[in-house]
Length: 126
Image (tube, rainbow, N blue to C red; front, side):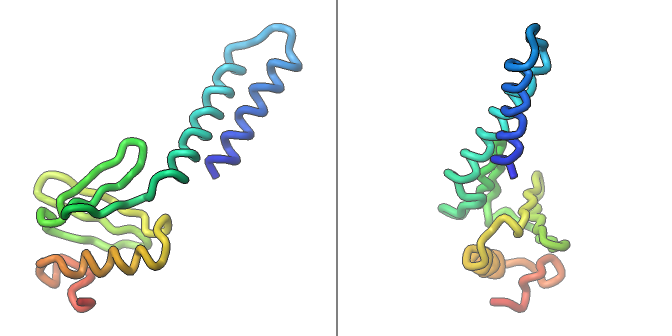
């Protein structure tokens, strides 16, 4: 989706430069928006959505968050999202962005956490 949006915005910016004799500020805004979306697309294809290393789960978005697996006190599953909570922070994971094999591995990792059954949807999956 980011690729399509980036190409559309850049196309609109180029059309403004070609069609209009006086260049307006919105042509630059269209070009910047297109560059932003293309940059986001390139980021998404070069980085995995989630990584788990050394007991730390990290969401690899532009402003990514990370959470220590040992600090998780509660896991909530709602729709296609997981919300992992610690005493000080929370991390929301969109499972639709994860491949099935990787999601099964994530479920296994979250199922192995030592949480009470009322605080995890993975209590009976280990």
